[in-house]
Length: 539
Image 1 (tube, rainbow, N blue to C red):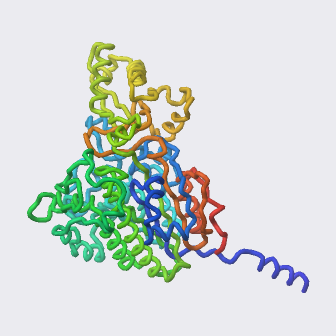
Image 2: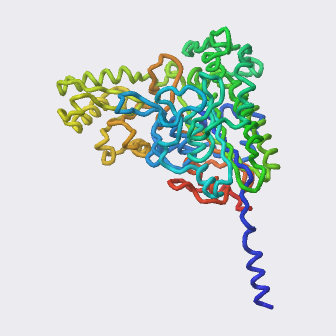
Image 3: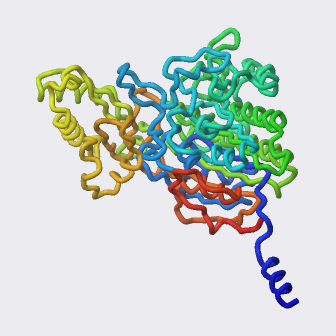
């Protein structure tokens, strides 16, 4: 009898049987750096504001690699790994066979389904070298758990869906959501019905108006360094016709830049929730939504613009509708986990920084490449082709490819010239990347982002406030400085301990933490760890 009592005591002391949340809502907001969110937070009273107040909120997560951009950011959030493991080093990579830049998820064997496929465009996860959270969920549930990823950008949807989920993105030529033959052989009925609503066409006659009274916006609406792109003009209200007489690619692009773009993704998410029956049983499902409109506004108007302030207010509203729909699908908050983060932050428009007294400038990679090519010809007596993709330098030409020139000597000469330029902190040939001294700690970040098959022959680091862009207006991102790499992370819902967590964490911790909440193993190549301090351990 005493042994039976002892056994029962041990049994009741153990945790209850594991039960994962029915639905995980994975939200990424493109270009929503920590500073942008913190500046706007006092005005966020909708879904985004409530999520910050009721979740485990880390304002200061920081990517540990150098080139902070959309494709590697989403791949890191999805895999828990840095680019040196998952292989997604940038949005575009250099294809030596063609001598052209191509998108990093390009796969000619899997074209876009039922739409034109531009050459070299993203269509499949074949270049993603690490397992994702979505893949691990599918494997862990033996294919029963469903995964749907939605974004305006293919390079965001693809890593969030992984190899085994569904990825859908907005085609600006066709004006509708599409996928590729990797993910589907035909559109499911729910996506057909959603596309038939033609929401971007319905917005053609609208204008993007301010959501709040003009007095509530900080700064000036009309800034000379902002472009007049897509026929929208620099000031509110913004036309969405794209200069067209009827809906078409230019108006679809204007719609994607506008604050209304969030609504399209929310409606698509609601269609996916219902059409796929997400959260309807005890097998965990994953819905991933990457809001890309913030990035489009950022590049065109900058992070301090009225346009960005307004798009954050509209995102706040849209996120409330999305979270409410996810709660209904899962049968209540108790069955739902939410994660919010961003793929990168972003720099102010450099001319605006310069006006404020910062040592800022626009670094034109085309002009830098010309200067380097002239230096190499003068030194070696033959032409060497130079292609700069942001901070990666790719070298080629007949003299190099035939072995006429010592490739190592050319790479080191290129690094030496770049290191002397006024916009550069340092430059290093790939031959010396693993052994070079790292007095400022930035070289370590470059190493974490370097994947030999896709990264440059030479890499360099621009000085702070140097914005790499060959376009004369707007702004960019892609450096290891805090304005580009620091992003928020929020966990909320089942098993999460709410609170403000001020320690700096790494976004590689996102996938492991969600794995812990989902009661499953981590993605295979994950480098991060579960944020135990924000987890209750309740099941």
